[in-house]
Image (cartoon, rainbow, N blue to C red; front, side, top):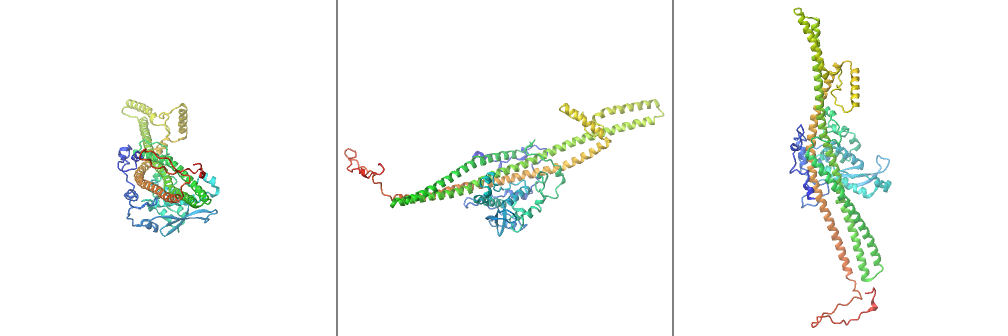
Length: 589
């Protein structure tokens, strides 16, 4: 694990700068965004409790003092108050409000406000935060029921008490993580979620959530709901996640590799062994429960000290069962659930890195499209210049034939003929630059097969048949290409800004997440050690009391007497004078 931690790219000590890790044509290493307050807020996130304080619940570590003065609502003021706040889910109730079938609603207490929300509303809150902040690590919520759960419990899957209790704990952790986040805690949508007097359906159908775009890649990374966003975002391409990069950033390649390794450790052996060990603890607790009941029943058949010793032993076994059940519950809450949560965190980080990858690909594709359009414009302008030169030559030839020179007719005729010849010769190179229509010349196009040659020739002919005025079409093409280039230049500038913002914000939140992970792992390890210590203490006390009762049982009647001391002369033990009472044999001793 030491080697594993040493390879962590989320640390900020020896971070590789983007100037040395990227060879992009446009400098995207110096971010002009996010604003300094966002980067500062992410860098001042909590690093976990100190060693001399009791362990706090997950997601409830105290933030450094913030100096916010402009509060949007009462919940915002409460969240950023000086006191140590904590959001709790105090109850889970079954209700049918605004629904035809019953469902479970969770009662949230945030200060003096109480709100009721069902699981699907927590899910919509998280998905809304993901869209509003595509470069921020949004904490996970508990997973949905699997098909196996529905198959086993059928209609009672949603009413399982253990599932509801687990959701209560993990949803409370989710709310506290959002409330402690330096950026997410300022979101008014989250404040309205905590306010019980606001309809959540109304929040979903009002700004800013109603302004979210359908495609997040064609919206500003810093504010996807910006109504004044440049229309040049529409010109940005929509790349896939699998599209390769020509010039990847080594920082984020390292982050992706570390995240994959972290996910394989957490989701693989750690979760698997944890589930197996919890199952064995559960089986052990069940066995102790049955054994304790059997011993307590058996003690009723005996009497005297033996009955009391057997009863006390049964009570010690029962105490072991109770302490094991308690240990199992603590391991589930303080180890298994946080472990699964960090497995979800790994998937969330992968998605954020994929978003950043797509933004980088978007930048490179926009750059390629701009270069292609500029080459296309150069070809069209070259064709236009050749057409004008030809038109001028033909115009001079016609003028010479209509108005010959009276002073030197022979020479004029020669010149006219020379001009006509020159005009004819001028038409020869024109064939390489000026097609009779604005379509591409098939002679310049590189093809890979005879079928493509035939298709290009047919397309070329059809273009010539349809274009009645190739000169006008060519000039329209030049105008449209210039407009496209202008739009792509604006789009490229926006893409550079988004990539800078994504790089700086994602890296800052990865650093914050790393500090949070270290603090949480420390709490998980200490909690496991404390749970085992308490389990051992309780068992030791119970079995020490059982030992005292067992020692009250008289010695076995057939126990052999101790041998006499050896004599001083021979050094051997003398013959025993005690006769063995064979009639008292009970079990053959």
